[in-house]
Image (cartoon, rainbow, N blue to C red; front, side, top):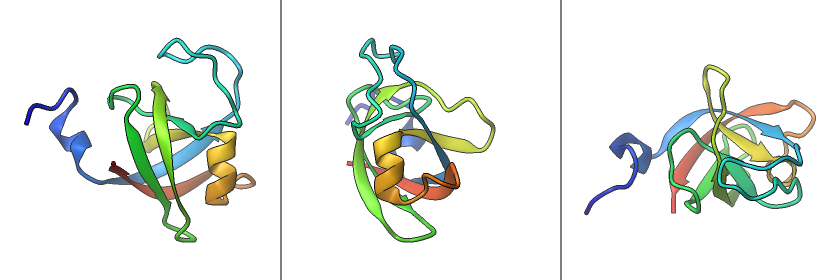
Length: 102
């Protein structure tokens, strides 16, 4: 099998995630929709579906990668506002997560 992204990205990753609610265009060219279940990742291909698990409360969702980032050290994912709400971390702004490529 040939990966279109870094081999380490094909495995589960754990780290910190934050959320953002801009309405500008994403790196994929689509307009950011805060109510969609989308996310930004540094190197996964656009359109990749990723299962995200909040390590604080066990909540999990599947999001689609449509942007690049995060650009803050130690963070592995920037999620849409809707995704953060479903994972239960809107107030804190960030949370520890693990992600798996679906």
